[in-house]
Length: 394
Image (cartoon, rainbow, N blue to C red):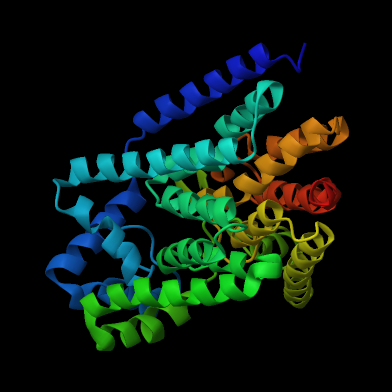
């Protein structure tokens, strides 16, 4: 009964309706407002695009919160610029709506590409509707939908048109850098993929830089981009492999909401050197595992590029809830392949791991449960490379 398509579709509808209602009821979308502010600055005062972020980083050493400065490349601000011409409340609505449409189109494209039908299609949409980082994306008003659309486009066309796939990856990398991790895992076509991705990113980034000028470009790199890489924000919404080790072993504090304000909490032991070593080794292992699994899959383009995209959720030092959205395409591909091959233990393990996302990080006593869930999903995904290697043989 649990595998009946009718039940799976009903659950998918329930979770999809839940995402729709909660997204509509969101009191504010701080990231969307921040993007619109950046878009307006790019249009009317490009010299001030990064001034607030640079000042905040210099004053605190932490990445600025949404509304306190723009951290992303200038092309990302250009993406938000058309919406910034609208009144602020309409701009927020239409930017979020555009991002949601891009997500739905990306999921539809992947559905068609995987040739889903019956129970596997119902399972696919159920997992997509449930996946909490997708709600976090819409709740914050981020631009991850644009990135996922470009990433899915690249894996759909990479076998027939690797240069076009590279152009899509480069465009995504000009918005945020992490989709570029897909290109080196492009298998036999990775040379063309890397070259076209690099060229595409240079062109799109050059367009953004042309609007702010070379001086502001150097200002962004030296005063915003490089300092932001060393930020160690204690916010409970930040959950990464680095914070997992830092909070679990290194004595790093985490800011949790309590009645009347915010309280810094930490575990009673502190071994920062061990935490740093564990974090560094984990990140190295994650990269090696991705390359190993892609190779063992015979460089299956769907699986390999999906793994490259997933690295964008696992490698950064600061990962917000919406950034775990990068795991979704490869998670869906593995779940569908496991269902087709009746790998019920694999599906059960994925469902158990997904329970770690059941509540938002700041509603948990240990926010890095999200990190553990993400790492568990990644380990399961890595372990199923044979599902794609067998497909390459046929």
